[in-house]
Amino acid sequence: MASFRQLDSLQVTLDQLIYTPKLETPAERPHPFAYYLTIANQSEETVTIKGRKWVITDALGHRIVVEGDGVVGKTPCLKPGERFSYHSYHVVATDSVAEGAFFAVNETGEPVATRIPRFEMKVPRGK
Image 1 (cartoon, rainbow, N blue to C red):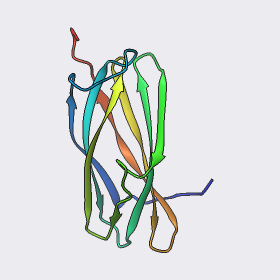
Image 2 (image 1 turned 60 degrees about the horizontal axis):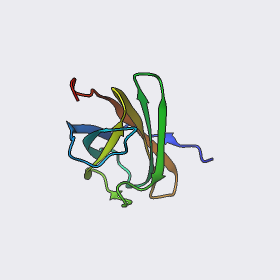
Image 3 (image 1 turned 120 degrees about the vertical axis):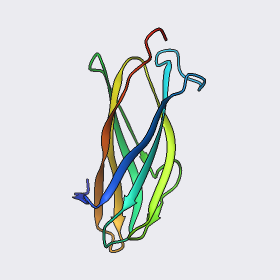
């Protein structure tokens, strides 16, 4: 497995998190949360996002790991100063937290990574 250099100047922010009960969910994880993220390249290097890894941990300590290529079916190439915003959703059974990382390569092909900040998904009571 490739060793990734942490690129702190590739910053990820959670712009919005919304409980979205109208989304289709599996019976065992009936609570959907839409999240809106922005990846901002504040470095001096061009980077291409190649993949992501999410770790979702529920209130009982159960973990779901989601890994995949790209971001919402894309591999955005971000020059210095550029941003990429997108939204997607997680489905959970109980109150949960999500955190993870984006994996990228710079213009020389060096693997770099940045963390996705941890956020809490609190199921509205009575749902």
